[in-house]
Image (cartoon, rainbow over all chains, first blue to last red; front, side):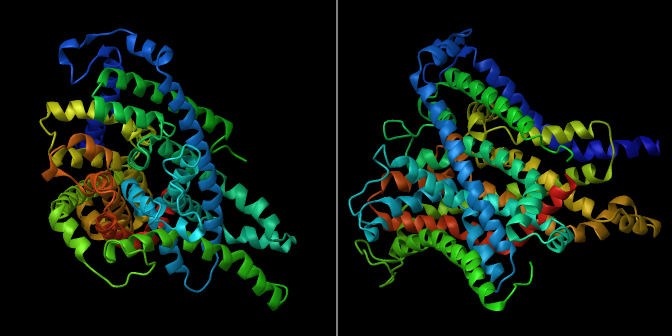
Length: 288
Length: 278
């Protein structure tokens, strides 16, 4: 009897979590698959019913915005995550050195991590709007960067970098602190300079942290709707619409749940495929 | 890391390698915050780059006129509930993962990791349908549930790292002294989990405080708005009133930036602990 009870303890401890995940994550994913085969629009309930693959046919063959949003999603994730990795790694290396005021410097440079996407929008609208922004001090008083299809992409990239780099820096700093100091001492004894120590000690040791951080961040940037929804609304002329933003607009604005579910399924499949591909290519966790 | 060969080139190298890039990056971080403060504190129409003369009119406008007092209260309710539930469940789950080898443990870990790949934006439609059938639309309850579910997996993984870092021998010693296992946990383990509790709790609070899409989708009555939704309306409707926009931004930023400043070092340590354990 005593062993029976002891065996049940871990299950009791995780049971609330399992119940929550089953009810609000696993079940909804199943229901998305179901809805994607239905006509379902909250504004036109009389037309609801089984649709078969009609939603998918519309998506693949008639919806130009779907294909366009896919292209922009890829561009957005790759550029944003790539730049965040470079700047985040540099920042982590800098604040890992010891200098006076390091704790304060860390708090300051990491702080945008805590800020929401909507607030980031609010702040960068102040910076970008002609007449109020900082650009007027750089001698470009009439540049409406957010309304111009040529400048809107770098503008949203910079705003998201401001908020996104600290995440990379925090994760990579945690990784840097896990590297044993003896490795650097041994490399120094062997006559390795700063650059060679970075290449042959730091980078290999950080490998798993970098792979994990880029993967998590790619999923996150793929999923990042708050900033684009409020800063550009996907515009101008829908040049900054990502797939999840498109789904969110369908859900919030037109309440077309059937078609939105089909778009969601497409998103899941793409994300799953890319994640597995990335983990295989990077040989995550492989013995070296 | 290593002794410079001679003092002078070492110092110049340090400036180039360390202080110059750090200074530039600090500027990039701080100028946007500073700009928001300037607009929040100066009268409308001022274009001076310094907050002088100072006025608090914009704060009065957003707090009373635009309803930020209500949004703020709603955000605090949702944030504190989600923090409390997430932390308790994370301690339970983290303890189970760190201290027991049970059937299904690996599966549970895999499920927790997989949930990190589920985009919240993609879950709007099915979650809306569920909350509608539970009559939770327009209630803060829907936000507490949804935010907690999305906070939980990473919190449990982090917490199991913290529990593993506490040696099992201290628990055993307490049990030898006659404590039951729950008592031993409360008396010996829990106090040592303090950094973990702080990291996980603040992480949950910040995420919940900042969540915009769930609040936008599940709540449409203005008296149930949270801060991010309120702020998004200020951005949309009052885009000419930059003072109100900036003051609303300060109200939204203050709690999370303060929490973050205090817990930042626990966060880095927490991620190391979770990563070491794997």
